[in-house]
Image 1 (cartoon, one colour):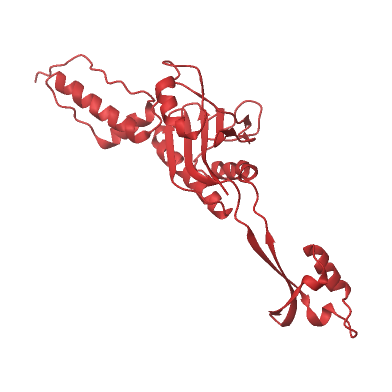
Image 2 (tube, rainbow, N blue to C red):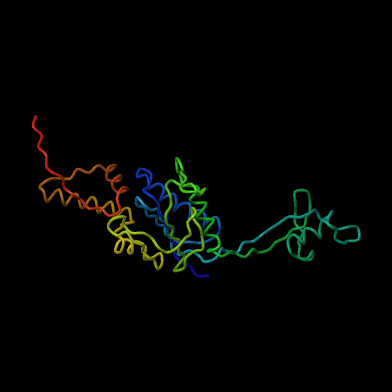
Length: 270
């Protein structure tokens, strides 16, 4: 069983800055939880966020669920066979529901004595067929205080959704997310690079958005760029940048391509 990287990006209208990072973190956590419950192995989990997008990339995701052992308890042995040892309707029905012959059933200890038992193997499903539901569940469980509708559809989300990227390796996953058909095209900066950006695979996500779209999707890199930029600009003007952590986080959540600017100086006379 081979593994592939998985990428989900949900492109929206401007998201609320104060909840942006928690939404992205919750999306990544929800996807990882869904994969775990489905018995699909995976590696590292990353999340990305800008004012116009929530995204998660999960590395080394298995292409198929692990096979699962299935156990089912049936009727009591005393009710499954008559006085001559022939199977009753109860035994025949239980075997049929399990898709096996009566001879393949076992006897096991039940709450009130011996019962028929079926033990089998359920083959794991393909990850590509399971991802649409996992994505839907992760989005529904996001901590959104108030959801909104848009257009004529019935979908609800924190903001209207305009594009969706769902890649499993180099392949687009056949899925509809929030009423939008998934593809491999993201969007660049609204003003600096307003165009579609084709993503070949999940690995190129950050670099492609930065180089082609002038969008820094990595929150930590964007925060550091803002801090170093304003610090350097202040120093060039003979000053010191006073940066409050809460304000830095808010500004990081408000921009996709930070560029520090210096305003006019002001002297206060008392």
